Length: 236
Ligand code: ADP
Ligand code: 5GP
Image (tube, rainbow, N blue to C red):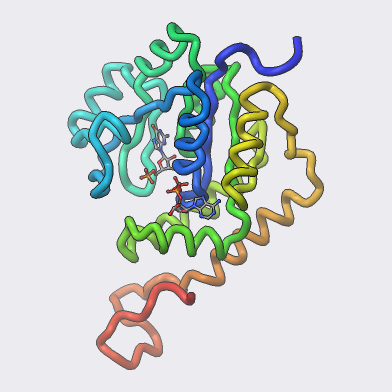
């Protein structure tokens, strides 16, 4: 058999800010056989987010109830919040013959690999560490502390990229969306064998490091700080 099985689930993982939500929206708008998996999360909604459309926003008790009742096919703690995929999403997409598009983190992707072996696992890389930092800052949805945490976590996520079936570099949106469409149709090119992958990953991580200040000193005494103002967290 060649190509992807019909209506295989498509998992998109990426460090925060790489552009997977933007890509997922584009892909879905152009492909009626793609349906977005609405996750449950304990994260508070961003101003533009709509309950039931972007996420099912639940409190911690509600999340734990869903998890303990086996209603989540996968779940993880990400950046300090609970996130999980309702099993119902998978059932509904399967019944409708649609590709379920899951925008989930690396821990969730590993669980989906184990539970849905026909799923296509795609890792979205930013073109550079600098671009990732800039995109996250420009999006402007996180305060400095949360942004810092997301960038710290980004490195760990990026290092998991070789575990995925496919890699897509989100340099230009159109090109990256085209790559995703080919993967969906079973015509994607497996880039894991690329010699340059390890170097690219190391380069992105080094650039993120270079943009992050050293971690705060215990006790709140930042060495060398001359003013009462907190030091800027990012060197941009
Ligand atoms: P994620 O879902 O991975 O956290 P988003 O889709 O929210 O990331 O994208 C982060 C920011 O980067 C957004 O402001 C988005 O408009 C921008 N962005 C996404 N893709 C690109 C791209 N190819 N080129 C430039 N900016 C992009
Ligand atoms: P955000 O808060 O920016 O919407 O998402 C933060 C991270 O959580 C992203 O990496 C996103 O892919 C991931 N995420 C969103 N929904 C789920 C989910 O249902 N399960 C898991 N494991 N991760 C999720």
